[in-house]
Image 1 (cartoon, rainbow, N blue to C red):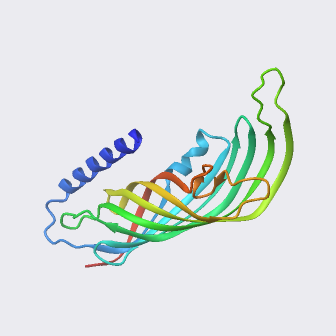
Image 2 (cartoon, rainbow, N blue to C red):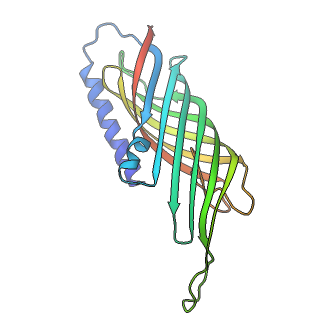
Image 3 (cartoon, rainbow, N blue to C red):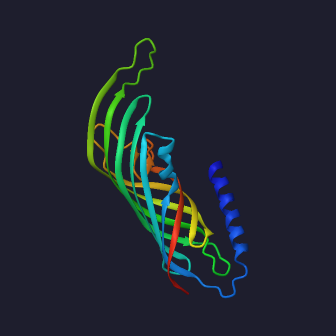
Length: 227
């Protein structure tokens, strides 16, 4: 939560600076177009976590003064090495929805403080490499079972509430940050195993339908019309 708070303060500062830089615009106009970006968090995570690879591309299209259609496409391959279990999850995901910009810009600025909603779908596979039977008796060693069993054609559906910020740091170039609260709708689980990680949804918790996440994005707006 401290990281989220610091990020919000940073982006608010950037937005305030960018507003002051454009106070001399004589004729205010608003750009309508397609904004495409990448998630910097997933792109840089393999640099410090060799067990992970993945990417996410995002896009939004402005349909009114404050409303945007949004889509996010991604892929993840994540190997988890816990004390009692080793498994790999890999698959693709899609999120579609909308954003509402609650920020009132000056003149021709297009900064955003927004909330949104996404429907998420993921198709993935799980590979259970090995697991250890839990043993609270330190005299006897834990019993480890190597399986290397793969479960294919799994899927999950969820809804995602989004709150975030996007600020223009250069002409048509935006830096963004968002936090996500997720609620699982339905998931297909493998036999005698569980979906401990779902691409696009992140880690799951036993007995809970909720998850969370965040992302840092850099995106570029392709202007189509000005109004």
